[in-house]
Amino acid sequence: MTEELKGQLAVVTGAARGIGAAISKQLASMGATVILAARDRAKLDQVQQEIASAGGTAHAIELDLLSEESIAALGSTITMQYGRCDILVNNAGVGLLGKPLVEMSPADWDTLMGTNLRGPYLMVRALAPLMIAAKSGHIINISSLAGRNPLPNGAAYSASKWGLNGLTYSLAEELRPHNIRVSVIAPGSVDTSFGRGEPGNPRKIQPDDVARIVAMLATQAPQSFVSEVLIRPTQKP
Ligand code: NAP
Image 1 (cartoon, protein in one colour):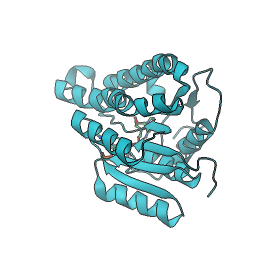
Image 2 (cartoon, rainbow, N blue to C red):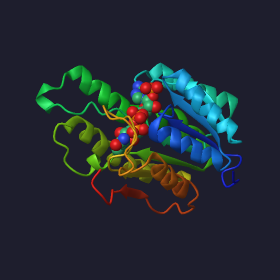
Image 3 (cartoon, helix red, strand yellow):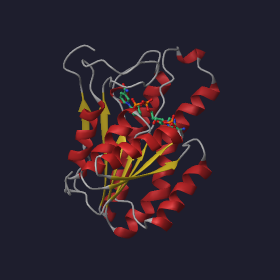
Image 4 (cartoon, rainbow, N blue to C red):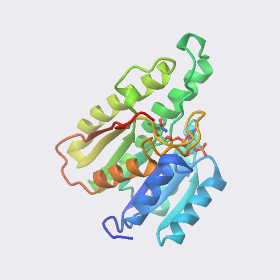
């Protein structure tokens, strides 16, 4: 445990497993109070207990990014109970990969865009006012190399992450006068159960690798640039 983020409140979406759980543990180990947000209450509680056992502080809040009401409720809870949000990590995402775009249903398109792009927009809408009032804060979006490169049979996913990158760059300009940073991390294939995969491939980028980049960004001071970190694997997974 360190104290670099002591006194800070961090909200992490998709904290129930994978990259979001690793980011949450990392931020808690640096002294932040972490709000773990996702749909699966049992998994959130498990992450919360792991953080508590390591001496950190976290609280689980159920969140469905596809529900505007759910996001507004999380925003109200954080505003009333904590009155601050220092770090927002928009991590939750779905892939729905493996099909040509012409075979993708409009319902799946909406789920994907709703989770990966509309979700972060609504989270910013709910929590950035606290940052604006405090004249400080950091929003970190978890994108993907698919937001920089073509991804056949993943066009909608790729489009959602290109969109998240665009949201990052423009939002960074909008929020800079308020002393709020907006950053984006774009990893290649990470060792999680994302999509149909099972974790356990040490040749892939590990969730902790992404978490360490979040830690680095969260402790960086300068407001004058957008941090965009690409994580490319050095070997084929
Ligand atoms: P994961 O293991 O599948 O975890 C996804 C997380 O998002 C889960 O905690 C899930 O929790 C949450 N989530 C999904 N839909 C949600 C919704 N409607 N509302 C709230 N939470 C929701 O995936 P991961 O690998 O950790 O991926 C995390 C992020 O990294 C995603 O944005 C992904 O696009 C990105 N990424 C992943 C990879 C990779 O290869 N794994 C590579 C590059 C980028 P619940 O189901 O409990 O809600």
